[in-house]
Image 1 (cartoon, rainbow, N blue to C red):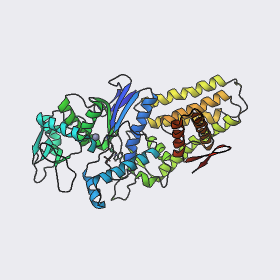
Image 2 (image 1 turned 60 degrees about the vertical axis):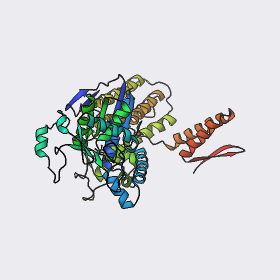
Image 3 (image 1 turned 30 degrees about the vertical axis):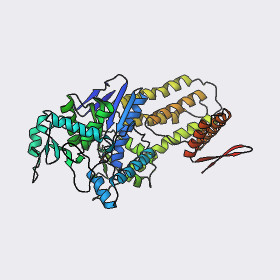
Length: 465
Ligand code: AMP
Ligand code: ZN
């Protein structure tokens, strides 16, 4: 498998540190609002990569943080006369709600700044002890001049960066490029005690500290949106690599920006859309399909016409799935037909084609094109005379390839009913075996699907809530 590594500027063969295991970390949201469609693209890409790696047989550990200490959260808390904890707690809950509807799974861990304060303080303390950082008036700054490789990710050298930087009035830093690791406490803001004074961490330090705590050393993949390359990821590298002398991550992956009608999304242009707003108009599976239909590194334009065209594309996939389902329940040709071998061989070849595209720097755009070729093949070669074996192969392959991308996730009404019946039978068996814990678990599982059970003298009945 090949990945484009922003650090080397090349597409490289991907070799994880430990064979078959992948440790990846993506920078997550600052939780002061519902997340927007641009954020959704980046979260979606890392979720889909993780699913694809698993499909390829890797064991993946994935962490994505929540920034729950930040100016924007403090401002929102002041506006709403609430505590910062209330604000961040609310938007973490809302993150999971929208993410689930987009088919984005929970990461293996979602570390928060407030829950890692000790590690953050210790990290800064070690940087001060090793003279990579200095204290001025209760603030702590990273001394960029002490880290020679500064600029290696964004491909800028220190002289260029210095020439381009702005010297602020009342500058207290030694060098305008130095960045804050710790900010001294201000009235009414959340703050924590340290040996150099009360305050709160700057933004960049959290990811370095959390990666160290979660993984304890170099990770395989680190990523985020392309805006994070500089300064956020550059600063993460400087802090971590200065201190440990080891790479923070071997592969740096950056997701292209999503624009709206070819313009940068911004509140002032009135073209800022949260996922919550979009779901009033579009099914979020359409949005998932749309976001994955471009290569992750390309910029992506979001417009109503493009989403509507994605909607039609997804419908074609559902039609193929439903037609196969219909043929399987109605076909009479259960015996192998003459061309069955040829048909199953051709169908299977799409798996290989799909993986070849996805292995090439995770090219979901071409991967989806292969799925459409498969659908075209199914539509012109499969009908009511096709053998059951070939029909089932077609059904499985379509579900497998779409499943990797988290698509065609909706159950049709028939299979939903089958699943409910199966769960009810399983519950009956559990009750018979006096395994009431399991029986209750199944009842709860059904409840989560909005199915209620009623025990009647003539057996168990179910209904939608
Ligand atoms: P934030 O909450 O602003 O820190 O952003 C969370 C993630 O979304 C980061 O990885 C950002 O790089 C990414 N991101 C922000 N805006 C966009 C956008 N318009 N397109 C793609 N990714 C974005
Ligand atoms: Zn980060």
